[in-house]
Image (cartoon, rainbow, N blue to C red):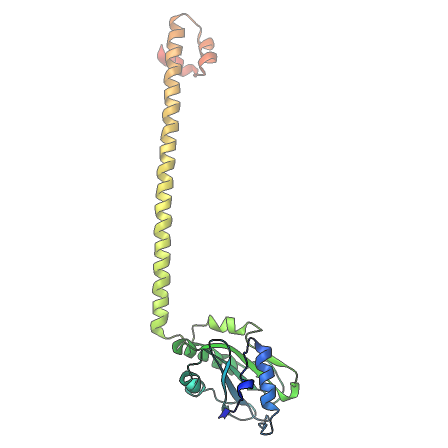
Length: 236
């Protein structure tokens, strides 16, 4: 059932406070609903967050009301809404979401993704807590549910996995290429250093050979060239 709104009432909704205040005005009307039963309303919003319409989607029992994605998204999709806010009441005053509330919201988020209608929040209100509400967005429950994969279609999960696997493969190849390059550069440096050491040793051996030829004692040659005794003896 669509709830009539004047043009002045079709304001912009930027957060849970705005949505709650709009619902308070709806609940204060002469045709106030029987809040001893659970009701589910949907506020459809334009791309500029202006109210497109408010609809009472379902009325249930004191403990439960059904959440049918087709019913919830029917008017928003017809009106080309950009996003929706779900709102339902808890007749007994508890404000924490039930498992069913969480599951239904999780499902609607995925339906919204398919239809390109963003589910931005889900509010729980209660007549017994007149000046209070529970916002899934404010408590970051929406963030957590958006990461859920429970209702993501299998083909989309497969696509996500393949993209992630491809990304990991590319990163691995990139790291492998970098490691090979670094190893090659390190090998060149080691080779250069080794060549430098060998060159210096050859030079020292030439000096030692000349010193021995001139009659210098081995200990003097060792001290001057830095060669070992065995290196010098090999020259002789």
